[in-house]
Amino acid sequence: MLYENMGVVKHSSYRVAIEEKELLEAFIKVDDTHYRLLLTDEKDQRGRYVHRFAAEIIPHEEKPVSLRVSFYTAKDTDTPTLIYEDKNPLYVKNEVIRAELENVVMIEMEGIDCSFDVGTITVDNSFSWNTTLFLFFLVAGGLLFHGLGQVLDCVINIVKKREMAADSSVFANGFLAVCLLFGIIMCMALPLNKVGNDEETHLQAVMQLASFPSGELHISESIANQISVTEFNNPDAQPMGLIEQAEFNEALSKDGDYKTGIHSLRFYLMGSRVPAYLSMAAAMKIGKGLSLPWVVICIMVRLANLFTYALIMYLAIRVLPKGRALMAVIGLLPQNIFLASTCSYDPFVTACMCAGVAFFVRLTEEFKVKYVALMILFMFLSCLIKAVYAPMLLLGFMLPRETFKNKQQRAYFYVAILFAFIITILLFIMPTVIAPSESGDTRGTEAVSEVSQIGFILGNPFTYAGILLSQMVRWIPQCFIGPDCTTFMGHLVNGSTEFKGYFVPVFLVIVTLLLAGIAVKVINKNNGGLNMIQRGWGLFMCFGASVLVWTSMYVAFTAPGAREIAGVQGRYFIPLFFPVYYMLGADVPAGELTGRLAPLRPLWYHILLEITAIILAMSVWTSVISRYCI
Image (cartoon, rainbow, N blue to C red; front, side):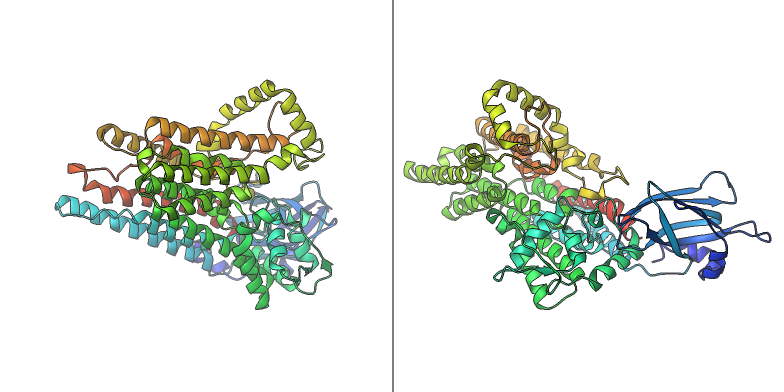
């Protein structure tokens, strides 16, 4: 694409790649970890233009090679103009760097705690077309101009005092379009090795489910490495740029045998998580039935997860009588779209919880048996996978009495939600309390022991309460308003970058929704809806779910008696986002604007959706496109 090749266009005289023979003659091996390439001679001391530099890396050990590549130009031969550090994946032989530098006189390659040999060296200054980049700009530009057009149309109608219908379904439709367009681009652009949180574990479960009914798995070495915690699947060793990704995908497809491979494996699949994996397993089953390449199957799995998340969230937003703007903003958080574009059960949990709460809010406006059934179903599906959200089932106890036709109907409703809550506790929480295992999740520390930890909590309840409350208070920003729960994108934020996304504008949007909702309540005293006691109950249930999140990680991931709880991540609290901010008052930001302010409603809708889409586009660009697709 033109953006990527501006340097090539400018330096058209160097559009042909420098000959391999010329490079090899200027190639110097200092030692096993240090190589030098000179691009000048006695006749020409100006150096050469370098658009892309590629070197074949042959590691001495079977592990990713950590490299530091420095580019020196004629302007300053003592200090590097560009320093590039990368960990090269084992399936990628060529380290490819987009330099776009003039007058390069020397390139140095140094191994960071590793030794390697260098094979073919290439300086490629040819023009290339970038389809992924073109699609991103097409989608981002199309959404931007469409949104600006809608905003301009609203402004013109306000100026001319035309009547406008404020269709709040714009949030549902806008969410679906933005989610799917950017999500599909991410599914296509992200590397196929471990980028999502625990993605290899989820992929194992999907493969096990997709092997039904035979239950047999015969996979090749490359696939076994992709779904295991090995150096082949090191999250720091991602194929950077389209050229490295193409080489990685080619190697994976060439050896990606998922039917008659030498490895016959059986993975552990928790039955309670099957609903979250069903769509992904179905996509894999279809791909295997059509004998598609393994790379295509992996992309299909991610797309299935994305579409499942998008459709459930779309349903939730359409069902909501209030708070659609808030749910659309939460649904389009960069972290949510990222998780939905990888192999993970988190998007299913979040979407089902949002749908369950949406039907609960609908019940506050109109009591119907089908709403009760769908509320319990979606909340139960969310709790089925992560039982720590079980207290959310008790939200039903805050429904106003006038919602019910009679006492009998209210009693049946209370029994139904209490039954679902008790079933969740008995099936998924009590077994750990009654019969804890001798060990836990040893990824945190080898000293983990559920038996010892539960014994410590029961024996020192006040000490544990102090540990719990202290850390919960200190971590409120990280769990409900910070980048760790809004824009953090898994292993895309690793040793090579500390970027966590544009969380400041996300935070400002959510705060604006909260303040606008409170302001409308103050202005319109007869707003109706939930009173302070009912909202307090809802927040208390969210607090109870948060306590279970922290306690579960203390039991399963933390050394017995530790004063700090390990393993808690911001993404665990995303399913609680909507109920927390809804209970705080961010439920009617624009829907209740009346009188002279009524014409501002459609304008508010489009501006809010446009800002949310821009934040998502900026995060996708910085975390995905600029790193993996250029």
